[in-house]
Image 1 (cartoon, rainbow, N blue to C red):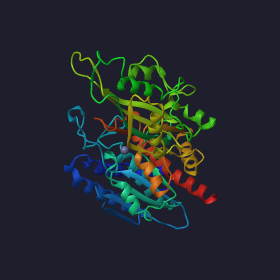
Image 2 (image 1 turned 90 degrees about the vertical axis):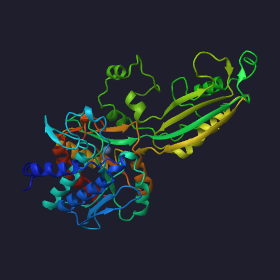
Image 3 (image 1 turned 135 degrees about the vertical axis):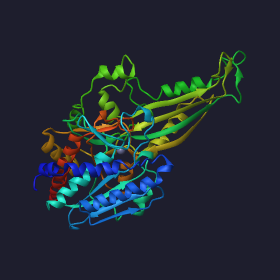
Image 4 (image 1 turned 120 degrees about the vertical axis):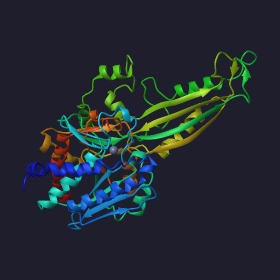
Length: 458
Ligand SMILES: [Zn+2]
């Protein structure tokens, strides 16, 4: 056995048996009655990683569900790759919409159908088998660690503390993650950026009680009107954000990266049709892909006040409220930004009202620059298998744990996804194409090799 294709061909049935043994464990983290299944999944992962060639594998306790940690250290002077994945899955409701039994995997139309087939059991299994291949062929070029957690689908509440407590054990040069998607079966992608977030509650108070709008209307400021006017002042006419100092740290993205980002296919007509709007709206000078990927955004998530019941009540309300959030991009810091809305609103508020801004929640953005050795290695590895340069994707959303890894462990993550948008993760009839599984196993050893080479040069 020497080539990766031969390795896959000769072991396909065993691989599927092993993957199915993981999938059959209903490790639903959101449902307490599956707590034992989390231990079953953690132990199964431990066995699989030991069988694949790890020197050491153990199931470790956290404040919540267990974590499986494994490693193979071949030479302390070589770089170390830390593979992060999750063993938990989403609930299966509504179960009557499934065409198969969620935890009994079935192969049909070249795909595995089951909860977890893609997210993340199928994708994480790629790493176990790529690792086994490198161990068996004596081609492992660096040290490897695995951390498989059991709470990703509920927001990883215990993992930050686990990282704090185990910094030395988790020491590595890069974190490798497969939990995202490709653009299409033959167009690979690497997720290079995730937006951060900051979220506020705003309260505008005028008179000390709701007033009769006939007796007082026209003479006293209406808090809902004032709040609306202040919100309107948060955007410039070109739809850029007008909050003072908000844009100071926004990283400009190079023309080269913008060109690559925009290679991601985007059909404006389909996009508009899917959400039922006639025209898109956003910051001038940027494409939709850029507006959701590399630019910050301002949104009012809710607004209320005064009388909202049935019929009419002529009232000039005492108080108005809004929930406001901003998506942040590199190099904005959510703690710094969280103060800015308060400063801005206090500055623009008329004396006729009092404004209280309460910060509720936030997280920092993440970026892996496309000249980072891990990105360069991922690009080369994917070109070898797919014959195409991957598209760097800036996701509009957030994966908080990736930011946490950078903040606590000081390690960049590289997100090489092998899933497809059509895999229906989190939904009934989740699937994962077998071809993506095999291509993933083909890609990962190349990533290791290139990453080790690039780090040796450093
Ligand atoms: Zn996932």
